[in-house]
Amino acid sequence: MSRIEKALEKASRARESLQTTGTKPVPGRNPGQTARPSSDALMNVTPLRITHPMLAAMREKNDVAAEEYKKLRSLVVKLTKGEQFNNTLMVTSTISGEGKTLTALNLAISLAKEYDHTVLLVDTDLRRPSIHKFLGIKPKAGLIQCIKDSLPLDKVLIKTGIGKLVVLPAGGTLDDPVEFLSSNRMKEIILELKTRYPDRYVIFDTPPMLPFADAQVLKSSVDATLFVVRERKAKVQHVRKMINSLQKDNFLGVVYNDIQSYSSSNPYSYY
Image 1 (spheres, rainbow, N blue to C red):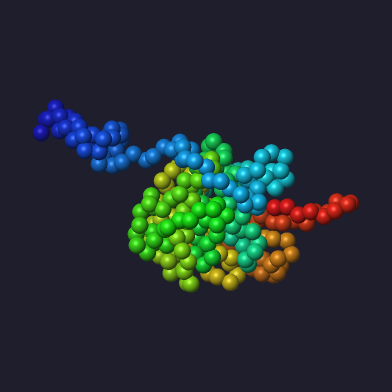
Image 2 (image 1 turned 90 degrees about the vertical axis):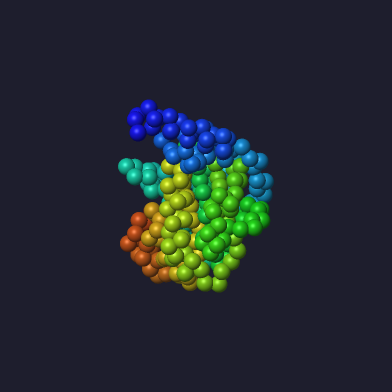
């Protein structure tokens, strides 16, 4: 076949693709391959109405807690960007009640408000998922269905309208989710989430490490781990043990949470 004939055949295939799908072919892609949606589309939705008082990153300037999350955001960006963008981040803690989910949520919101980043927050606490409760949403499906039933990710992602924040909810609860989280399908999902958008942070909220093995299973599949320690909550020896286990992988750092600060007149606490 001559070069002219090949060119005519290629043009004909592209024309057929346009007539069939109603979309223009994208240079560098096969005629049947769809273009990746622009991150600008994440902004064109009605923002969720957030009322939970602990989502400090939603508040305006001059808020102590909101400013602390901005500092955390800056540190995370500094530590994860370099020659390689370590964009998959797991947030965990020693025991429950230390604020790991609130830290993951506020960090995700703070990052998503920046122009440079899209953010996907994944609820991998399949024992006690709570991200949807904080955001006031009622998802019908989520990560569990993606793993168990091979449901496409596009079917369960929820645009929040909060900056460029998208949420992948848990989709229910499981008594023993370790086999799901350690499956090849879960590894494929993490890889797909990591590579779909080059500017996207993917933040995974996980169960606490001391009572459950979930975070231990996930840590080798993500780029970095952020560990939340709440003042006067977990025992020091347990915190030390969990951090030592994380340092074998890419350990990002510790968020020291709910510090009690005292003035001469009255005490107050902040995240």
